[in-house]
Amino acid sequence: MHNFLLICSRSSHHAPRDESGASNSACTGAAFHAGQRLACHRSHHAERDGYFGRGFAALVCLASFLAILQLTQLLLAADDAASRPNFVIVLCDDLGYGDLACYGHDKLKTPNIDQFAREGLRLTSCYAAAANCSPARTGFMTGRTPYRVGVHNWIPMFSPMHVRRQEITVATLLRNSGYDTCHVGKWHLNGDFNLPSQPQPWDHGFNHWFSTQNNALPNHRNPNNFVRNGKPVGQLEGYASQLVTDEAVRWLKEWRDESKPFFIYICYHEPHEPIATDDKFAKLYPADDPSYSAHHGNITQMDGAFGRLVKTLDELDLRKDTFVYFTSDNGPAITGIHPHGSTGGFREKKGHLYEGGIRVPGILQWPGHTKANTVSDEPVSGVDLLPTLCEIAGVGVPTDRVLDGASFAPVFTKQAIKRARPLYWQYLRASTVPKVAMRDGDWKILAKLDAPELRRTADIVDEEMKMLKTAKLKSFELYNLKDDPAETTDLAPSESQRLMEMIARLNGMYEEVCTESPVWPAWEWPRYESQRIGWPSYRNRPRASKK
Ligand SMILES: [Ca+2]
Image 1 (spheres, rainbow, N blue to C red):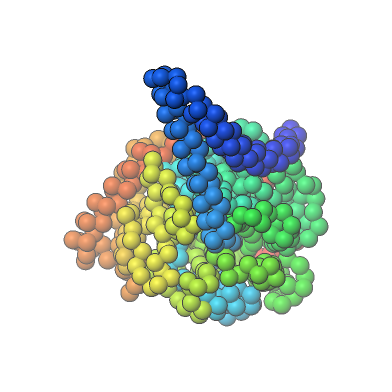
Image 2 (image 1 turned 60 degrees about the vertical axis):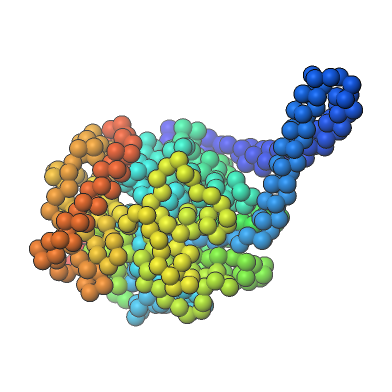
């Protein structure tokens, strides 16, 4: 039944939307000319038609004026669009802070990303909006902390949890202001993927999409679950990062509207498990444990794909007009099968609100704005993407809702980011006791809940939804990240004044977010995806090194 549902096709959806967009512009132009002719014709008669005629002429003049205003706005928008930068946003999956050579890994080979960092600005206090996939991606696309939006956990196939239609993504804002838009790779913002019951990538601003609901299945090798613009494409040959890059390159070279600036959001599946790696990359990391070779090789394989993407921008002479941002959606998973990811020394890992779960690599290039081989320690978060791109593109951000992010454009000139709200994280199923965290300057506070621990599953249970609306914060921890980035020494007992101030701010944010957060109906996780994973043979590795 589920397979049947997946092949519901909306393949005709894409083209008519583009066509209707084009014809709307043409109609506006035609209406303008017709309106002008009508206005001229009517104005001759108005002089002899007395009061009514003059009133009518005034109305026609007003209509003419509005039509001219609209045309002028369109022409300005077209001119503006030609001068605005393109955006290439690359998001990896479960790539830890320490999983790149340019972030200090002493074994991993990531020559293309390292070169990109040498040419750009490397962020050392870059955060994901959440400690796991769907919430982090929700914050990335909406500029809002994911609990506000209702994305509380990773989203399994067929879950009712999703980024609702009324949310406004950065893709929608850019598309509405004249950008062509594309998503390739992991989507993970809905449960009913490619089904009419929930919004799909095109409903959230992407003109072209080549996407999977969550992971590439059965694994990164020869995946069979990609959907292009509503149409399942069947089994593909190759590895996910290469296929995703192939699509991105084709869109850049052949399919995008070259009269518009563009926004492409490239979501690599790597190195999230189930990992599969081409032997030529795995062989770079000889070891007794095949999962070690596969994990490290997988990152080098993705690095090669990223290198090809950057080369394509060079070939098309787009680099100078393009803002490129490379980052990750959360810390390394470090599981029994793949315990080889690195947080670079930060505490804990994916699924935790300590730094290892949320601090990620972040590398930027925007020629003329970022300087080569520079580093910034200014805290930047995934929720900052929307306000940043909107500021750069001259697009207004939504004013009818709370945005948690702030533009990080000031880091290009070594200025501090002006934040109306501190950086904030919430995860009721976090794998360690703290479920809410906030960073303000060098200080970070974490809090427990006065509620029982939830099971670490992807079910939605009434208990969780009740907890969301009733649980209070307690048992606070306080760290100075500048002096103690590994969060080893809780300063709550000795910094009582600061602690009280931060508790007050944290309680304010927490209550506001929980009040806004939608409640989902109870839902039992059907483990649809787990039944379709094809684990490579190294799944049976000895678990002695499991953390
Ligand atoms: Ca992830």
